Amino acid sequence: MNAPLTHAAVVRQADLRDTCEVARIEAFVAEYRGVVFQRPLWLHAIERGTGNSAIGLLLERAGIIEGWLPLTEMHSPLFGRALVSSGFGVGGGTLVSRQSDAVTLCRAAEEIAQRRSASTVELRGGSAPSDWHVIEGKHANFAADLAADEEAQLLAIPRKARAEVRKGLQGELDANVGSDAAERAAHYTVFAESVRNLGTPVFPRSLFDAVLDLFDSDAEILTVRHQGTPVASVLSLCHRGTVMPFWGGGTWAARGLRANERMYYELMCHALCKGCTRFDFGRSKTGSGPFAFKKNWGFEPEPLTYFSWTAPGVAARNIDPTDESYSTKIGLWKRLPLPLANRIGPWIARGLG
Image 1 (spheres, helix red, strand yellow):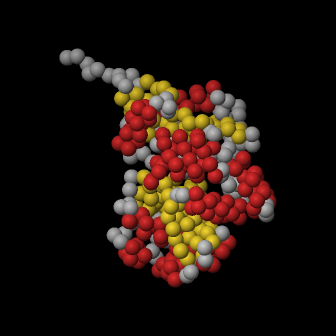
Image 2 (cartoon, one colour):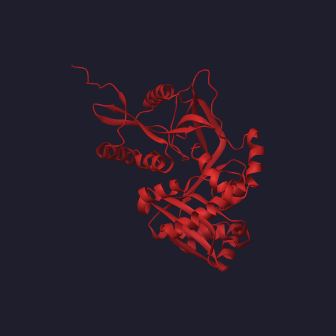
Image 3 (tube, rainbow, N blue to C red):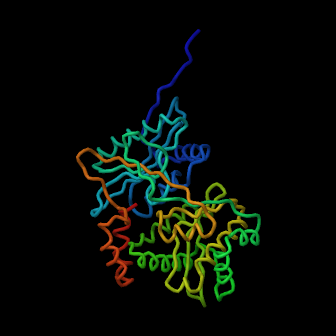
């Protein structure tokens, strides 16, 4: 008998300007239930919004896609160069039909990194070769199914957190969903103040605009206002029936008003109206305030495992805000006047990824 015909794996860089090629990759991501950050659409939004180049590696056999590694080439005068999967996301990494192909894609990423003088390759998910550095125990994700209706969703929230939500519902707060110019401005105002208060540089507004423009109805802003003033706001993504509050925050006034609690409950209700069945509360640092907040809402932490590779003889880039070396800088940033933080923050943040 003749041996079965086998085809060698071919790895190449995807042409992300070719609409047909992009459509093929989007179909592969959908078929293998990839995360939103593995979509070429995400890479395009990040490139448009931050100027960091989109790179994608395809693994094919006989012209059929069997592996995909989305990458963003981060470049920063402060933090150096890195290939990140995926830039500005909390997920990404290799997506393959057979696990051995993940190693092949990662080796190809190593080669591209060296050619482009990038010190590091970072994968926020997927799998990687055994000789790559494993990062675990630092972050967890929180996700759960939505209830059948709004009242059931309220009752699904544990008692103490539910009491805070009820206070928010009884207060002088209004919630609105949209993505027009007014809602975008409100969101950025709140988000910028929120991250400054945390000691973090704000992302460029062009990043949020790019995601809203390219994702269309799959990206929306929900803002909570008190007497007409925005006090809490979140930009959410919708992917495969799951809503993900991704870029959100609140002003100092939000805590006393229970505006954050109102915001997340309103988002759950809005997701139900859209036909979503799952709520992804997103990633938080283990042991942090947001980590405890999400647990108090009844969400169970799911530990996340990331991977990184560093070029020989080169120091890996360090953008971990929990690192002791950043504590003084974070403290100083919290005290910056908001207009100054908003002016220089995007220049720094677009290189973090």
